[in-house]
Each structure stands twice: as structure tokens, then as C-alpha cells.
Image (cartoon, rainbow over all chains, first blue to last red; front, side):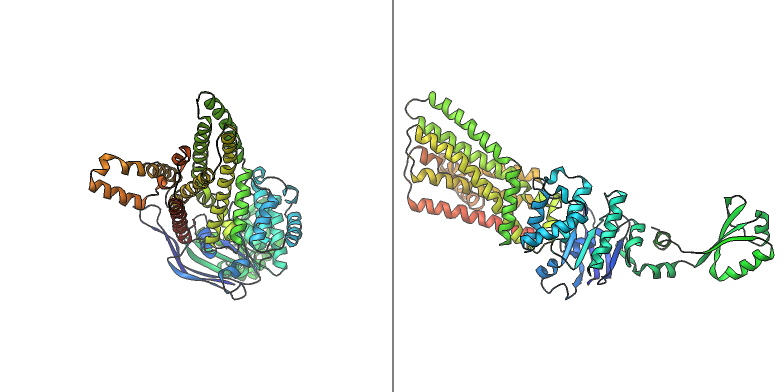
Length: 303
Length: 254
């Protein structure tokens, strides 16, 4: 849907200071119809990439290519994108509904449609009750929820959220993750940045992982895990530790009641079972061990 | 069309921030000051009313243009509101022009409120309301728009404090230019005179659109002078807004 092609961006903090490289020939694609997570540590270049994508800042080199499905002119493209910046801020003296009307009017959405969509998404994000209040009285979470409604008010094809889960309580995070799946079920593409790996793993089909302005990985989460981690199985057994040592298992951990757990590579699974049975060790549990995305990312990028 | 949407919501936002309450308080203060001053005046109380009124309109509208204008665009960038607005199908030109029109509306309301109070008192104390009085208020509006143009321009290239300092500096220099040029010290020195003419060409010449002295002393002004002054203010403001738009168009919003 959107392709980042060899984007390089340098920033000059001050006139007399040397510039630093924020994005280094960064290339990636946002696939259509998926929920894609944009991962990276703080300062990795996620927000800079999103600002380039939204045309807020220029690049030093490279280009962003937008799919024809989004439109051919910038106005058409942006009409099909719902963007929510990190820590959104609105005019404090307007009410939530007035700001929604403002954004809806700019998108050329009819007032009746604005009313319908704001009611729908306002209920969904549990912010409708505060629509008539002045925005200056909103909490951080309420501002975030209002931002979600505004980003969807023109029924965009692509939704881009910059750190949408920051500032939300656990209930709010779950609600948003569910909402992202719902938005995706409506046929929309969702792209969001986060530095919280577990959130990305929970909702995304695809992940784009950048570090220090460079692409580390783009693709499906499962493939990343398969390619970067060796497949392992987890054993839980009941015996004395000496017996385990006797059959060559040195790395194990006690889990109480004379029980121990250890992992082996999947290819060594049968050999380990035979050894355990030969030593009359009771096998309590045997399960495949799937590493989390977090473990993979730490390993891949020393994140 | 979208420019007008931005203008409308910018106007509503500023009105809702209760800034016009300050205008009403200023109007009330003006009523008291005019009343007291006219009690101490012999013969021309209406002129006192007009003098105070025009001074109050001018200072309040230029002050408002300066202190609100400084954040008109820069605060939007700082607060990241601009990301929400510009992520909609809206050009940067339409956004900045809309913000300026919205602020212009506020200045117009401010001038109208204090202007009505002033002219009422002026008329009540025996003054004759003529077209020059009304034209003077129009020129005060143009003066405020020029100040707005200066502050918006500086707020896009420097920080807020410097923008305010520069605008006040240009306002003072712009008003002093006409009289400085007329000083015999300057008249007798051709080099200084040329330098002042050059400065006058570049800096905003507020003295050119200041009709207060003429209206106070009931001097008539030729239409050609008024038209020239009007065109100068309009084109100078337009030029500043155009430059600001070009800068904003190329500005990295980071």
C-alpha cells in the first residue's frame, strides 16, 4: 500500500553542530489489508518515518510510493489515510464534538455522516460521553480516544497510529487492540508504531523492525521467530538431580516437589526421551517451546 | 472553501478562549478614562474621547495581533495540533491563510467593539462622526494586520520571544520613520535622508497609515493619499503573508 524506498534523513540539531543520521537508506512496504506493527526502540526512527510518510518533513534522499488504490494526488491519498500522532493535542477550548466536526468538515464529510460515525466510534472507544466537554478537561487517555475517533471519521482505507498504546491503562490497551482487529476486519489496513513488542505480537500479522534508522526485519512474525530461533521442546520431569546429570542434562531448574524442567532442541527430543525412560525418570510434561517475539527481537537486534 | 473552515474554527477557538472579555474590560476602562479626562478638559472633550479611543483601539489590536499571532502557527507546530489538521486533505497554504483570516476576524471584532464605544462617546460629547473617523478605524485594522504579518513571519523563522521583540521593534521604528525623516537634522543630510528612504522602503512604514493626527485635528485628506496608504498596507501585509506561506510550505514540521 505504501513503499518506503531508500529513505535517508539527516537532522542538524544546531547550526554549528554536525548532523546525525536518523534514517539510513530505509526501505519497507506496508502490505494492504494487514495489521502491521512498526517496531523499534526509542530513537530508532519510527516517528521520523511516519512524519515523512505523512509529508510533514522532507527526506534527504529516497522516496515514498503510495499505491494507486490510495489515490493519485496528495489530497486523494491523504483522504484515504487516518493518522493519529503520538500524544495528540487538540484545540483546548473547543469541545470534542466541535473538533470532530472541524476534522470532518476538512475531509468533506457530511454532517449527518459525521454524526453517525462519531456516535459509532465514540461508543466503541468509550469517549462519546465527553463529546460535549471542552477538550482542556480531557485526561491523557481521553485525548487518545478522541484521536482514534477523529482518525476514523472520514472512513479511511489506511489507518496509521503513532504509539497508540502509550498513555493507556491495561483495559484501554486491550480495547484498542480489539478495535484494531475490528478496523482490520472492515477491510482497512492498520499500521502502528510501538516499542512494546508484546503488543505488536498480540495484534499484528506483519512486523517491520528498525534499529538506528535501518531495517532489521520485515515480514510475518511467525517466519521471524522460525528463522531466528532454534526450535526447542520443554520437558518437566520428576527425579533426583543426580539422575539428570548422569544422562548428560546439566542445565535444568527446580520447580518444587522434586520436579525439574529443562529444554532441548527439537531434533534431540527422541534421544532425550529414550535416555529419560532408560533411567526410569518420569516425564510429567513435554511441550514445544515457542519463543516470544520479544525474545527474538532481543536476540536479533540486541534490542 | 477549506481555508474558510480553518478560519471559522480558528476564530471560534480564540473567541472561546475568552480573549474578547479582555476587550470588553478594556472598553469599560476606556469609558471611565474618557469620562474622567473629559471632565478635566475645556472646550474639546470630544477630541479627548476620540484620542483615547483611537489609542486604545490601536494598542489593543496591535497587542492582540502580536501576542496571539506569535502562537498562531508556531503553537500549532509545538503542540502537534498541526499534525492532526494537515493529515486531512488540506494544503499548507489553505491552513496558514485560514489561521490568518480567523485571527483577522478577532482583530476586526476587537476594533469594532472599542470603535463603537469610542464613536458613541465622541458623538455624545459633541463630535461629528464623518467618514474620516470610520476610515481611521479601518486603517487601524490594516495596521494590526501588518503587525500580524510581521509576527507570523518571524514566528516561522525564529522563536516566540524574539518574534515579539522584533515585532515591537518594527512597530516603534515604523511609526517613528515619518517624523524622523522630517527632522531638520535628517533633512539637512542627504546621505541620512537616502538611508531613511531605503529603510522606509524595506521596513513597515506604520506612520504612512496613521490617520489619528489628521482625524483629531479635523484635517481633510485627499483621496489619493488614502488610496495610496490603503494599497501600501494591503500589499505590505499581503507580501508578508505570502512570504510566510512560502516558508511554511517548505518548513519541516518536526
